Amino acid sequence: MRYGQILDIRRYKGSLGLCYDMEMVQQMIAHYKHAPAGYALDIGVTKQKDTIIVEVNDGYSLGSYGLDPLLYAKLLSARWAELTKGKNACKF
Image (cartoon, rainbow, N blue to C red; front, side, top):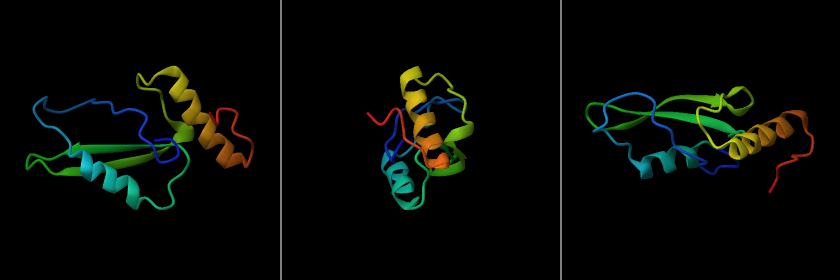
């Protein structure tokens, strides 16, 4: 996530047949009122097909996990600028 926008969704574990509920993911994002400028929202799907939050990780400490390098740089820059109260060099 960067400024409340999904940059990418990466699947890393679980059954191929289970799919998350995108509307539920959007609700999770909307309810995170004090979200940092950059973060990762890890979601899961239960056997009952419920979409749940597994964890949330701050953007300053994320690995790229295959995210496009430019998007990854923008995410890191957004969060770092927020933490240091500096200028975001990748505000575009």
